[in-house]
Every structure is written in structure tokens, then in C-alpha cells.
Length: 174
Image (cartoon, rainbow, N blue to C red; front, side, top):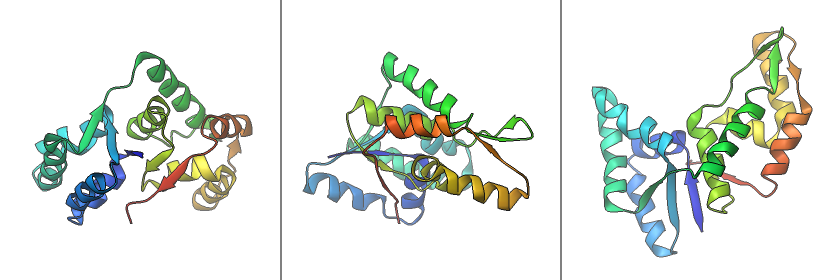
């Protein structure tokens, strides 16, 4: 099994000192744990420069150095797919004609990496990204309730994303 991790889940596991437990899971069942380069940047490279986040970054860096958490680069066709995912997801919801950019590079690249690796297991804590993939209409209603504004929704974008990831399994670090 290949599991692709997003930044949010790695940070959560590192903060709770559970990241080392993944090493046992990887070895036990011949699992492969991977992250895209952008997630590595978000969880290791940038936090290493910020004293209060440095320890979490070191924990994740150790996992990468030991080789049980792999950093993968997106191949050219999958970089194009990442751009398509970003376009669909970040042009799905609008308030007063202005688009809501809801997902970031880490989530986008993790989704494209799933396709590149022919996997369907995404480990992500980010609620917004999960909602875009699993229940975009519920997300629309949530945004409307929280912002107290009408949200316009491009159903065709949601349908196309759903079609790209028909058998996606999403797990959380919790």
C-alpha cells in the first residue's frame, strides 16, 4: 500500500510524538509512505528556520533521512494535473464574483502524486480539502453560514474532481 501524506497530518503526528510509530507500520506491512516536494518544504524546510517549529521539522527530517518517509517529485504530466486540480478546486466557490482559494500547494501536489503513484490513500487532516473532495455542497453551506454570505458554486468543477478521484480513501492522523 502506498500512502501519500499532506502537511497537516505530518505536523499533527510530529507534534504528538507519534511520527516514529509510522516507521513500524511501514516495515510491518511493506507500506510505502510518501510526500510531495511541496509538503517537504512546508513541514521541514521552512519550519527549520522558525525556532518554535524546529523540533517538529527535525522529527520529519529524521524520517526522510532514515528512508521510511520518501519525498517524491511530480513528473511533468502530473505537474500539469496538479495545475488542473488547483484550477478546479480554487475556482469552485465564489462570493460576490471573487473566487475563494481554498487549497494550497501541499494538498494539490499530494493529490497529483496519488495519481502518479497509482494510489488511492491520502492521509490528510485539512478539513477544507477533505470537504472539497467528499462533500462540496456541505462545504458551500458551511462557508455561507460562517461568512453569512451567499456562495456561488461551480458544480461542474466538483464533478470533474470527483471523476479524477473516484475511489479515493481519505484518512486522518487522528
